[in-house]
Length: 458
Image (cartoon, rainbow, N blue to C red; front, side, top):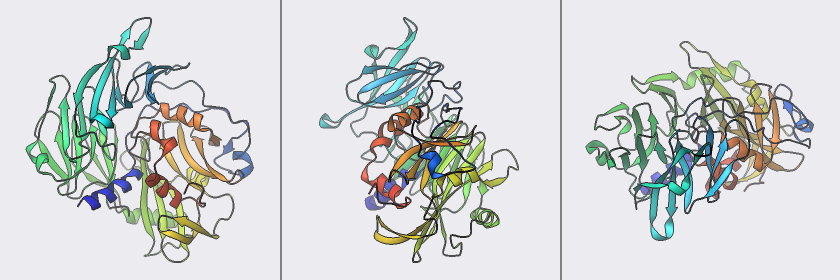
């Protein structure tokens, strides 16, 4: 059982999730930019790429993000950084044992502290007060709760909405729900019987809980009212606003579902619709056949659309790998379509259709790559990608500007700036990206390495 859970946890590194406060991208195209309609190697590999501007749009979704009306908060080393949304430099304050920020509003900033040496796993909060301007005061921090079992960082991690904190215990895989105002846990008889909780997501007044042995559950916060909304557990969950989205199937995608915080789950997209779309749009050069597999490689929500990053592959020799981004309008009767510009940005600039020898998780093999990278994060204005830079012979971070259609490589420092404006779950990985994306562990790199046409990161 534990072995199965461990394999699932690794696979869940490639999950998508919540929308956050959108980032502001560069609005001009200069050296290093390239149109999404005409991607060329010379354009994206040019020098002089500037950093992200120090401006950001108004906060669009405060729940489950790290923003309030004035600042975005993030962890950098052991510093808790407060950066103005309107622009300007951030202020950092060293906080002992700081691990990551888990929530922010106009009154408090919540963050996790962990000291593995003495088994201290705690959640603290610091006030935002009007003293010399509205500012965070970590020197007035207070302990909210402590759990010696620890907080599981993936796939559920710690969720907070200012009223409740929900998380999966790191050692017992049990669901925990803490009422901040009442200063007590709400224990659930039904959930206590679940052997393995694999994922949780706050959504409105409810929390969605995925359990290996009990499917997908919806629980009313603060009560024991729990109902099963889907018989199978959800491996890939994306909560946005008051809707939950997930894909059936472990690794290989089946159908995509949608469930409102209050209401019944319904099938949103079938795998046959996906297959038909890709065939109609001409994405059949990857040997689309009964042996072809579709793997969900991230769910994102922006601009009232659900984006699905499809990894198309089959295991016949030579193996093939192709990533296509599709999307669906979330309004009633919305159309399903291929995001051609995003997909083109992911396409290789050379060696397309040639079999390359690749060292991957399953050893060496020949792979025909129709892609050179993948999407990692989306905000309202930008899409952060991880792409092969064929000129510099390495993989680099790049971002696509939805407004201008421009794509450009950016430095790791600029990536950190982009991540500052993201909600934690508006990403490919259910991890603390603002801390770990620049230092991913071997398991995450192995999955990324499998879909990149080189061995740079292996």
